[in-house]
Image (cartoon, rainbow over all chains, first blue to last red; front, side, top):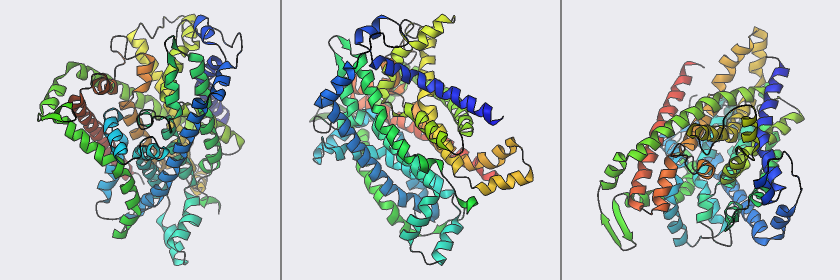
Length: 267
Length: 289
């Protein structure tokens, strides 16, 4: 297939991806009554009320700030602990390494619904309930194994000779790791950072269970748009549109790392 | 690849083990504990042995949900993995369009799961939603709130919309990690596009594909927020999957014992399948090098 064909396919796919998002934007610019009464491809009576409400109400915008705080904390913790671990798994044999690796993976599989109560009890007993760090730590349950796993995959693709040459050249391990190894797996690190951010950003159950007021995340604020008169669709859509912004910024910042992989062939 | 024996590597893994153990082991033990007890309150609980497991394994509703679940997960994997690989190969290699495509592709992943369900709920409505109105206008009799098959299909399309980007992003990063030297060698040998894919790209993608397949399997097996917001599990119970049964039991009826037993069984099923996938894909790659 020629390159034009490929871009047409990709373009069609992105068009399909954008349709529901467009619909969300469309809903966010309408009043609740307009959304539910007629079908229209664009807002008939364009209104910014939904956005005004979100930016004017402290519970809404602190919700965003809370989410951003714990999500970034989580991403930093996950990458910091996962990088050395992934290196160890990809390079060395040690007692129980395979079992440990698979045990880590099993934590991504646990169904969250029934773990809620134990989590609640655990975090309350150590005095972390309703703090950002509690949510960040709870989310490491699935972001850390995922990070180790993705990074290990990318690290295993790097030939071992590179490590050995660096040691022979007199590099210490930390210097080798930061200046030589990390740049080689930058596409892996970029994707991993994005996935940690993303999974923590959209997770609702744990975040909602572990917070009440001080650290309440945005997803939890959103569920309260259900009122006596039913769902406020417009407000919810506006909040949804705004949840896209931080993540889009994150992927914009890591894009270079995702798009630039192995330089070996070029040096 | 040859690995070196090195016991001190444990030190590098220790932080991960500490962080994960804190939030994993204690809750898991609590769940095991619940699963063998009848719980009335904090101080009145009785040991019931394997009673809950026996009840759960005989429950007809759960058998139905399990079957639907397998059908759904199989469909998700069959569609999203090939589609994801294909689209990753369509991505531009360099330039500003890479950034644009990456951001656009990532957007669906960033919508909180309950909002995905809510937006699709309107998007697919036959009276006021773009998808529903369009489908009916071109002659399909589509109504996801009334027809079980339509509802199931809507959940599937929604999942494909939501998650294929994850496969694309992983595969794209994997493709970027292939050294240029491989392609240059292939060009010199005059290899066809298909041969490049089959003998260079696919084997190199094995690692990320394993991650993509397992992640999509596990997440589709635990799908909860989207169908419960979209259809509430209906019509009938066409879109009631395992997680919904579980949540009804644990949160709705507050049957902690049976719910705990259920989640352990659930957990074991995912574990078993993931292990099989893991071993199969790992061994598949052994032949090709």
